[in-house]
Image (cartoon, rainbow, N blue to C red; front, side, top):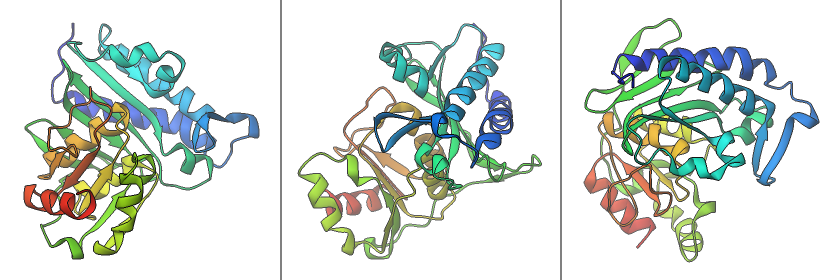
Length: 275
């Protein structure tokens, strides 16, 4: 098997950029009715762009890593057995071709493309591309997180400085929370400075890793949504854990995820929103 090296993240960034230019951007604000379909609900959509981009991204990955496991969101929706195939794999790639599909289908520019690289179920690299601006954020385990501009210039990412809960701004995806948290958490929003939701984990993780917001809270933990972003946040200096305090792993799909500037902020947020 071709081993994954940190310099390969640039190749992954180019794969995402190519898929965006060929399959995603030409369809943006140009989707016919038949090109948008429901999966599980009116809030869970798939478009022709998702499917075509995933095929192209997978082909690019397999060209570099022919024997690796590739788990794409859209392929898994057709064959759920794929979801368990990366847990013990020596090398696997988790692909979300269009994160924020509802935004994309609605003509909003808040969507992105993501690849996470795992080795035996542990995330070792993450790449998140913004098709609209053309830049990419990248993380490699133990090597930090950075932004790569459309022209190739790189700059390091750093989470926001710690502060009190009342002054924090964050993104909360509360609609997937189980009872009683679904009722409890929104009722406590007034204790936080500002609470938002972009309906796009790709952009929310980019915000947090660059210091533009203070925390993130998620309930549903599908690996293609969070593996790349969680590593990005950690490598930018942040602290993250599941609601019970255990470490996040992409092989765990429940238990919630809270990301903050440091452990003390995490504990304060947990006490404020969840306890």
